[in-house]
Image 1 (tube, rainbow, N blue to C red):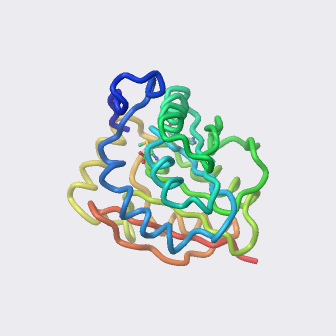
Image 2: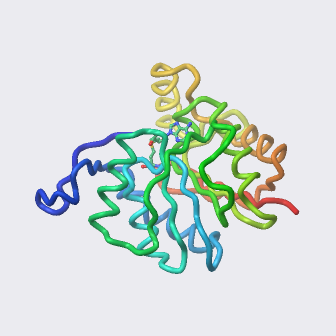
Length: 214
Ligand SMILES: C[S@@+](CC[C@H](N)C(=O)[O-])C[C@H]1O[C@@H](n2cnc3c(N)ncnc32)[C@H](O)[C@@H]1O
C-alpha cells in the first residue's frame, strides 16, 4: 500500500492518522460501477483489507442502502479507516474491525456480501485460503464474494507491468505474488463458490465476482 499522511480537513483532529493511497482514488469509481451491479439491495458488506479506508468511505457514501463494515489486521490501517470515517460522518459506515483473513474465527458471523480489494497478492496464499473459508462461513447461498486486483490468466501475466509488479512483490516476500485466476477459481470452488464473471478493469486489473452456491 503506497500511503502518505492525509490532511483532508486542513489539520482537523478528525483526520489524525488518515492515510491516502493514490491508487484508491483512481480505481474507486470503476470498482463502484461493478459493485452497483453485484451487491445486494440491502444488508451488510464486509470489506476485508480496507487499508486507508478511502474505499470504505466512497462506497458507503455511494451506496447508502447498504451497511459498510470495513476491516484490516493492521493497527495503522484501522486508525486511518477510523479517521476517514470520522471526517465523512456516514451513518451506514461501521467502525473498523480487526480482522486477519487467515484467522479461523472472524469477529462477525454473517454478512450479505464480502469484498476484498488488492489483498490476495500482498499476503501469503494462506490468507486467500482463509478468505474463502471465512466467506463461506458468513455468506448465504447466492451472496457475492468480490475480489479486485491483478491476476495471471492461465499462468501468463496480462501485461509487462504486472510481471514486473509480481517480481517486486516476490522480492519483498516470497509468499506474495500475483495469483493465477485458475488457482483462485479452483480454491473458491472447493469452498462452495462459483465464478459469476471476471471483468477487465483499468490498469490491467480484474474484478472477479463469485457467488456462494446453494
Ligand atoms: C495494498 S493494501 C490494499 C488496501 C485497500 N484495499 C486498497 O485497495 O487501497 C493491502 C492491505 O491488505 C491488508 N492485509 C494483509 N494481509 C492481510 C490478511 N491476512 N487479512 C486481511 N488483510 C490483510 C493490509 O493490512 C493492507 O491494508
